[in-house]
Amino acid sequence: MKKLIFGCTLMICGVVGGTGWLIPGGAYSSIQGFQFDNPECYIVLFFYAIAVLGTVIAVKALKDEKAK
Image 1 (cartoon, helix red, strand yellow):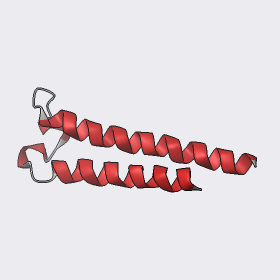
Image 2 (cartoon, one colour; image 1 turned 60 degrees about the horizontal axis):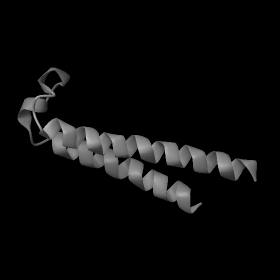
Image 3 (tube, rainbow, N blue to C red; image 1 turned 45 degrees about the vertical axis):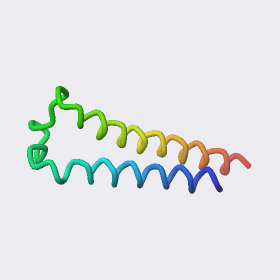
């Protein structure tokens, strides 16, 4: 159960952090404005990678609990 909560927390924090980082940069109001030559894009990608990692952890925890 602890891993499930940890995974969900990572997922929420990653999505909120990535989206929060995108909102104040008015140039990123669309996908076309999101360019990889800007160093800030790596920070946003890091946050979304955390969200994906959290999803994987949560799904694994659900499968483990279901197998018990």
